[in-house]
Image (cartoon, rainbow, N blue to C red; front, side):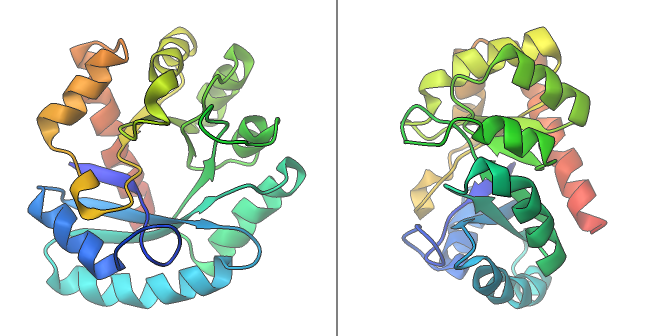
Length: 217
């Protein structure tokens, strides 16, 4: 299993990165990406804190670690440049806090994330068909989430992905150790969103493809 949406005490999570790593490994995950909530005030600090840690801990922890960010509450006009800035600093994966109905997110955030070439769009809420079509064209992954408050629109996201061909991934979006769900729970969430067993398997394959891409950065 792979989880590409993990928060720690470096942003809004409840545990240090090392503790999150330990829980992920115990739950059976073979790779995780720390995607801390960032904006212009903390992006560089977060990445400079994470990058040395993952280089060292990945060698000895028995789980592959990656450093990333979740660009959060950034004005849509600034999102493409923020994606580029995060990558310049060293982020191996960049996602954007999408227009979940569980939060107040600026209109236009989903579109800006897709146009800016984020690796994936987290909990995109009531994403439009046009945005999902663009995500398919630009190979920006849309997230199916295990986090309850963001999962309310999983079915909508899965339906539009099936219609448009937009690629999907499944993440936990966790803040504490026991948010790392097991394989059966992951499968149930995917099927509950209306995905077929084959679509669920492709979603898991997509996470592996993203990890392969990160390894080349």
